[in-house]
Amino acid sequence: MFKIAHISDIHLPASKQGELRGVYPYSRLEKIIQQIDPKNYQAIFFTGDIAQGGNLNAYQLFCDAMKKIEIPCYFIGGNHDDEVMMKNVLSTHQNFHFEKIINIDGWTFIFIDSVKKGSIEGYVSEEEINFLKQLLKTIKPKQQIAIVVHHHLFPVGVPAVDKYPITNAKEVWKVIRAYDQIKLIVYGHVHESYSGRKEHVSLESAPSTSFQFNHKFEDHHDRTLIGFKEYTFDADGYLAATHWLAVH
Ligand SMILES: [Fe+2]
Image (cartoon, rainbow, N blue to C red):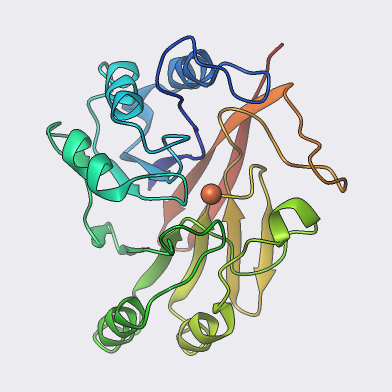
């Protein structure tokens, strides 16, 4: 049995005092990190949008906030990130990784890039889909697989975020649904904790560490809750839990 913490959509501005939609993302990230006891987790997954504007200072601030965390951290980019800058800054830290595939105790985690440069919505490139297809051809019948991606494949019921899903989700889903070994898709981008199901695959999103988009109204967001998700994996499957922190 092992646990993974899942953190997403931090949206750091260029300074610690930087404000976004009435909140201070850096101090909110610090509050979340204080909730994470590294000895309870095998790793932390970050599913994108670390920086609000892909700014160099924002990635350096992220490294500052994370300096006491010594367990492995795995990253994929979000639509707000500058992937090259993010990798340049973060890869100077020995426990920060950008692997496409990791294996832990019978589970394989596949990190898929869904960022379409210059767009809010997602798109999984032909190259990325081919990578996934080739990889899935090699998996064993009893292997358990989770896909880790920034954008959502399926609507979550909130118009403000459902405008910007993976636009070629049908094509991606066609590949995924052919494999019973794929148990789970984890994602960020939607700024809320969702648990869902599509055929044999579970869907889990992490809340944002800054603010949530959980309202049916355009441009309405919730500044009072921040959080992260936690998964406990074993040979039978996984359990998900959301850790919420009330803030003002
Ligand atoms: Fe996003």
